[in-house]
Amino acid sequence: MDNGIVGPRQINDVNNIIVVSDIHGGCKLAVCPPDGIDLDDGGKYIPSPFQIKLYAMWRNFWDEWVPFAVRGERYCIVVNGDAVEGVHHRATTPISHNMGDQCKVTMKLLDRKSVV
Image (cartoon, one colour):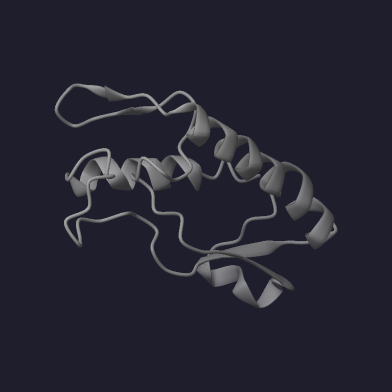
């Protein structure tokens, strides 16, 4: 089944590029899947109502806008910086200073099953 997403060997067959920027996965003020994230220490991060609203917008982007924009053609995804929040500027908003936890958010958001 062709789900529209291509790998590096198929890039010549792509006419569309979907660019997302500044996901900041792992930030309490950024999009997060509504079922939360299992943390490496055994805990669980549950997103705020604001994050759940952002997630609804994220889903609308992938479920409505992307299919409309690519017209059923194949596409690739470019993450244009700040895929995760990181630990910087004495920030107090990361869900965890563990980069593995932060990466889980972005990986879940960009999972092949989630963006198609």
